[in-house]
Amino acid sequence: MKTETPRSHIRCDNDFDLRIRAEMALAFEPGDPPATLLRRPRPWMKQRGVQRLAAGLLLTIFGGGTVLAMRPPDLIRETIEHEARERSLRGSSIDTQQLLSHLGLGRAKVLPGFPQLMRVCDIEGHVAYHLTTHFEKGGLVNVFAFDKPVDLKEDSGWWNGVHWRVIRSPEGKPLVLISTNRKAMAIALSNL
Image (cartoon, rainbow, N blue to C red; front, side):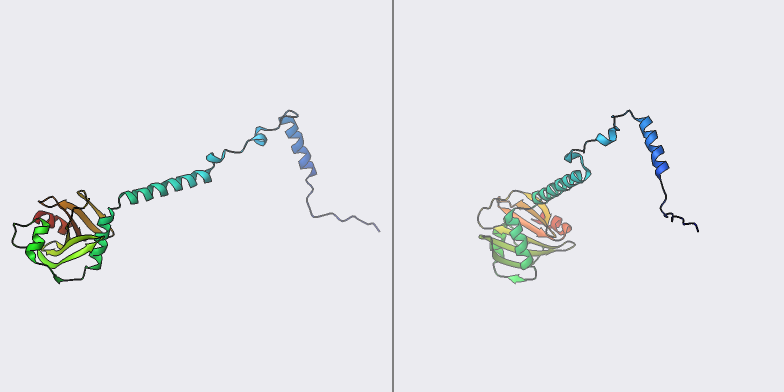
């Protein structure tokens, strides 16, 4: 009886390995490894992940800066919040002529539009005369006139879902107009 040594099921690549080594020895001079083996790692600023992170940070910073730059002054923001709290109020707590004089419309005999609310309010420590009026074919507009001079320049914008605009009364006092409808704001500007 012959005893045969069992062959393993793993392929023997010894011939293949020897052939590749021989070809590599002919392709390169001894002691001269391929340049790809000596490649230096990329500088950390040229790596894609770092570049994407830097681009994301820049966009976030510029985006946040843009939002903060478009932000209205504190007094305007407080006025918008005040208007939102008193949006559903109706009635009159002051005399029409007194309100007209504070709006700079002392010569007029009636308030513009259809007045819904007339009252004296306190906004950030400033006494403000609040008029909510409805303009036909426009909508509701809130007009705020401050009793004492406030530091507001003529400006306009959109903040927190409402349009706002600062204009000057004929007497030079700033008036703050707030409306959810741009068309109503345009009609109010033509009537004030």
